[in-house]
Image (cartoon, rainbow, N blue to C red):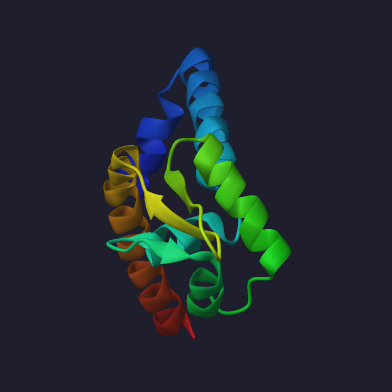
Length: 122
């Protein structure tokens, strides 16, 4: 941890500005309470809206709809419409969403480490 602090303090203000800008872009695309949960729910599956809402407990239909639209705009989700009676709409992850795998793995590992840290300090 001290090593990371030392490295961070050695960065120039320009490096810090660039890093913050990149972080803002990342958080815009995948930040918030629900986006990564939606991505995880879609991993390996093509899923309908109501099924997604059942999988992701606690998310409202309005919020899920907004999150799916934003994920689609950022290139992580494809929306497939099958015309017929009834109209069927399915959601699936794009190939680009695979770039999130290392991010999700890192967040998961960090979450596990953080949980252990909190339990240890109590």
